[in-house]
Image (cartoon, one colour):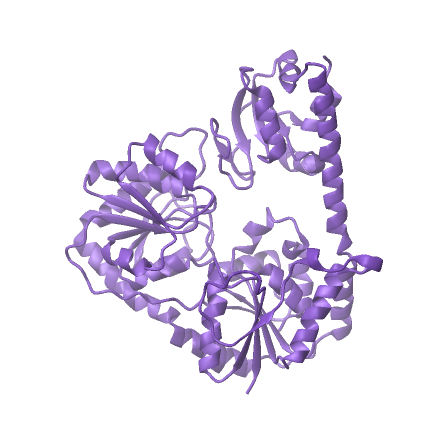
Length: 536
């Protein structure tokens, strides 16, 4: 009997966490001894099988006295736990756990599982856990790296490579929610997901206003909870949809809602392999989703041959519509119109919906626990590649990562120092009765774009209130407006016309300028430069 360690930050909240919990049952039922290495100070929400082992990735709790390296201490702790429980196979979930798993590698087999479109996240997650060097060098010493969709695996191959042939697509097991066909379903549209900027439920709410015009008796239910709830509630009210849109929050009886629904909708910016979509399909609910990086096409039976589509494509189990780009106005976009049109299409076409429902129930069988169990146990575990590891090369890479751990801390210190200096200048200016608005007004700057919506942006917006200076838009990695009154785009989208761009994360100003200068001719000014050049 082999011992398996499932290494995961928590057992609550997300798809990767639930996958770990599901695999604990699968491996236990197949005769393995399962140990779940997770932080026991965090409430466990998912059912699991096996033995819990307390382990936290939090470096802040490590004793840093006498020059100790917190990363080294935490890696050593994980390595000792693997030895204590005689772990034969260590499987980690998501990048933080993957990083610790590979650094603590001993004699056991090491499997790293990713649960995202890695190159998309790496654009914004500026840390060693998402660094290109980590993926291209350190991770190549694993025995296996798994991906939740072929899209995600191909994305990895394009950006980071596979020196030793260790990458493989392994789908997450799906909680099947079979329901009996209900011919008398109401015109109910449903979406499931955290209320977060990545999920972009605001597009669905805007599109649903058009759905209501064609199907007056239709209803929209948004399941999930998150930081955007209040803003979504405001949008519902603004669009006159109060009473037509329900937000029950996090619920355990998702099946009860799927029984009633005719159409499931997804508007995410990117999704590796959305389990909520598979659960809807298992319940015979067809899907309408905007095209996005990730595995949505694999789930709906649509090829990747056509990219950057301009019109909808009908698949076996649902329909994809063009990717929804964030716009500079609150007007309903053409992409949102197409999303609404296809929702109406499925609400009205009972024959097409029934055809897709039947195909969906058949398709999701390849994601069943039984199929995934056989893949792991009868294929992966029994056919591990026997290859001679370059131990000397691995040790060099490992030591390089551990020794360079202090660099992120130095970067953080530099960030705080730059903000301290900025605020000191800002306070001095205010004490003299000045404000940033005078800088812009004196230079004839009437329209600006703000780069970054952190705390410095909040202070800037307060300073500009009543000045008449127009905020054309903001550029922010989450592309969601926390302050209201202007649109927000990502750094990859088209930059509109303005008098200048103001960078608020001043510690990264030079890198941001370099990136933006290749895409726009607008003047790019750091907020620090505003104070350095200011003349009262």
